[in-house]
Length: 420
Image 1 (cartoon, rainbow, N blue to C red):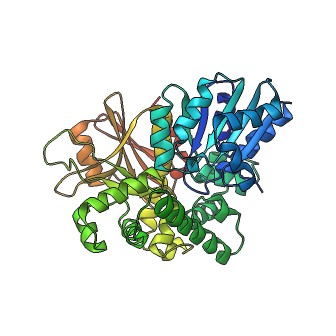
Image 2 (tube, one colour):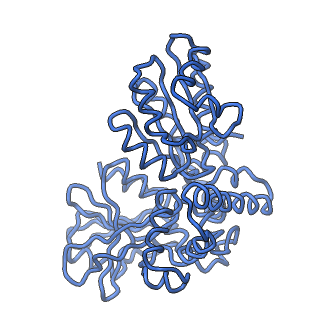
Image 3 (cartoon, rainbow, N blue to C red):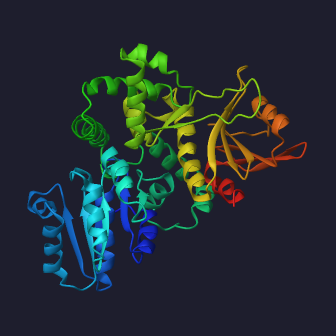
């Protein structure tokens, strides 16, 4: 039971590059499984491989010094080229300097490294390995990956047509993903009780290992309360002072906790798009990197969307995740827009100084209508195109010289294409 990950092909392409391949991401997103699949791919090609996991007592001894590790590799490969997988490297003290030393030995080995999204891994390794590494981020399973897994990959490459034709089945899968999110352990669990136990274990493991142990943060229960508040406020302006007052911690602590949550791939802030007066210029809004995690924190994990008063925000969070991927693929920026009088647009993608507004509606828009706030943005910035994502079919309408496309959620790729 393996969920194919789109990142696999990117990793395969990087195998011929001498740079150290570093796969980061949240705990239990599937990094180790992905590396096993990469190792299997290499073995099938007749390549020599060695897999060492810092979490295993039997392997940890080989991480003590670079000399010890190199001797272990030579025992397996000799002086022949090979591929070395080092899993959970963030637990190694001074991991960046350790990997830098290995790289600078100019060995005939390619190193592929993984670790949870920790400060030690991304910050310290980044400092030590300038010009020697490339980071790849593995998030929880995306909706397209989830869709293909649930349909046995019969419609891979033709997902949009499947969702359009098999509308009912598509909505069932959308609702399931919105209820449970994309952690592989949750997806692969059977009954609801097993899924809930899985997400609870992931959440507690995050608090115990990434926060309490790795980051040496005391009172992780304060952080848990903060996460719960953020889950209720996703997609809304973040007021740091109110959060501090509600949790009962100092303002600097709230900001430090939010930084931790971003660095460990749990939560992400986006900032306002602004060029004119009367617009919000500082306060960010936030979204979770996994819908199941936000639902669990809010106490609505597994709740049917028709009974979930937050279903609109969950859907908006889903679109954020899809647009975030589009942003990275096209080197654009992702913001939101809000005026002090309350006018707002959910997302603004911008590339080459051209803003593209995107409004999200968790409904089936029958008659094409443009929300007043979106009309306000169009009047002020005159973008070439604007988008409304909803649950229904495609339609278009012109407002002056702006083409407004109303598209179903599964056609989000059209926005991606428009950025190229």
